[in-house]
Image: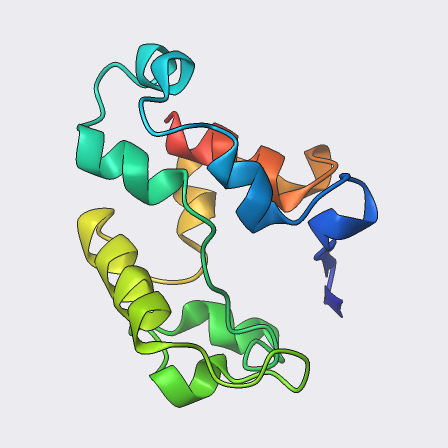
Length: 130
């Protein structure tokens, strides 16, 4: 999917498993992740290592990135996956709150250029370490 100059790539196209399964492979203790993110609480590490949710079809223009509220649960609907679960929406709300997200363009505050990354997971990994 492309929105302006941004291209979102499905991890399934270049990894041997789904993102949810890859996140589970980290294990529950996550020793390497905890060592890398020394200043993160265990709760924050759990948040960044779980597969997130994204309102793919809702983000249909660059103006959506300027919105300052998390979209409603209904805005996370996709024709491919249908409605998201209450649990997944609560996760999105918690991530939005815990990491003090202000807009969908929060990544720009970290000085990251998405065009320098081959995947969204690589971008989010760098963003979470800033």
